[in-house]
Length: 438
Image: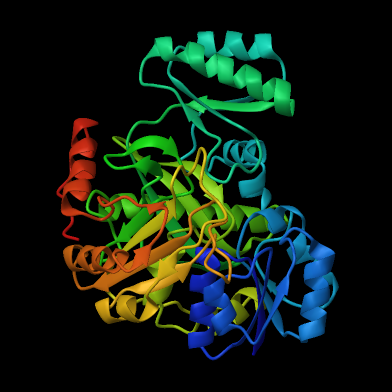
């Protein structure tokens, strides 16, 4: 099967590797040439992923049978709709279905209208005075979000106390003046986790849970990034997520897809729920209309079922199964110094791929070109896979020394100490549970 992969990040490198492992003849198109994908692909086109016409022209030039969309931005541009109109099946939701991610106001209104479990109180404002008045009347800490795509970096969580809402109001006013509207929602305290599923519009198949490390610096400090690493456990759960809470979160995603189908907007592709596990149970923080990055690197190396088979099932409505190895994974992302605020760019790094392979770690390239020059965002990820999280973390950590340059990473990603911190936080929030072994 000839498959065109759209996107050039670490997530896409992991997708491309899984497709080739499943026997696909891979083609790629992205705004820069990912060196990992370049080694896997038979041909490579350079274009902005949001330039739908250019991407479509590459698909026709390469004569592909199917297209797999990696990032969210081209989904917002209707790339799946364009391919389907051209008679080429595409893995990913339509422009309308992708609004679950690309339009947060749409997503919250959809959840409220259909009483989707795990929803939270919210309002969308276009008027500054109305926004300020509502926050004062609400009387609880709030979270402020832009309506559209932010790359994981636009959310403002200002604090636990009511007095912190003054900062929230100032940020909300800034967004109203910039974008014309803003989303304000109740703050939920707890610990976040990622739940990804495959769907053909009817059937929903879960993937192992993962937990992301969004803060730039160790001990969960510093600005929010696209994610500095993540881990998953051999049992598919997380140490602080009980089976009951897992089922509640899964129900949220299943009901979402069933309701989208009922409303005439079938959701086909990967749906990723970012959940906050609160004392009362899982609350949906946001939907994402694609694999997580880095979380794709936790689940795809474990996938036993050929990704080509899953992709065919998604596009023709006959999704069967998706089986995963029962192993733990740890992803550590290396980013340019200064990321995400003022990252260095245009500097080359050195990667000893042979030595990394000898450690047992997987290597995925992201925001770095074919000359190993930094492009300004998270550049390279290493992934440890093992029977236990301790061993997976050790493997990932041992690989980092073979990547040299103006880079930094979080040493604490996937460590026993950081996992235990999350268990402790859940207990401090009043959650009663027995931790799962990881």
